[in-house]
Image (cartoon, rainbow, N blue to C red):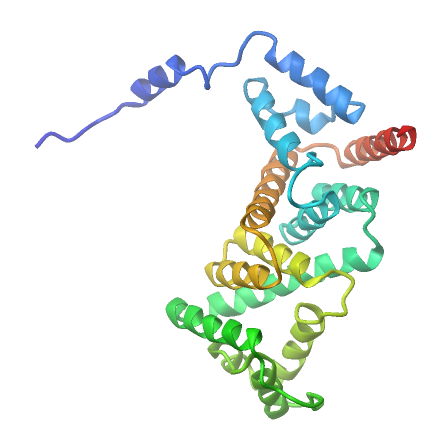
Length: 292
């Protein structure tokens, strides 16, 4: 039986024949003009991207993040971008998504919720992976939790959480059971860890609604990546009413943020200049809104 062998030269030759791999004459220039028309300038980080790929990269960015017709509103997309950026961490993207979130109407409390959700996902992802929790068991326990959340049986007011024993009781009251990863978390810290999770992620009175928080959780989890958190927050997002399209857009926003964070950092873009360009983009956008 012969083994198929394809050399690097053969792959290059095949790609050269593909119209997708070959930029058309003037395509980069046309793209820069469209960027100028859309943003009011061509930022340095977009100029730093290879001309052969800038048209496709810009089209992707424009069709999802900058598209007002997506399933997710602009504010939600930018808060997802901020949450992902905060835990990369990427100073460029943090600044960009903070300013554009505000442009889209985000309040300080919503920005804080988005960042706190990112922190929680990194926290519990570390616990789950570090303790090597059995994934099949985790999925089974998650299914039990979501079944309980659909039909909870707890009555009366919750008792204060002050120690490990009261934390376990409150976890069971809230989730229907105490999953393994919480049971294996140090007893000295479980009361505080649980109170934080409950006061942010599971709290219906936060600035951000449950669906937005769970989509942020999924987006952050997707690019860690953490299989546990991806599974959990996908189900939690659906429980909170998220559609498959919204879930797909949340994951795509995470991918776009990682993509451009890599370009910005890898290209050593001057941060002071970048911030000035972002400020100009925001000012230009406000002028467009004011005209309409």
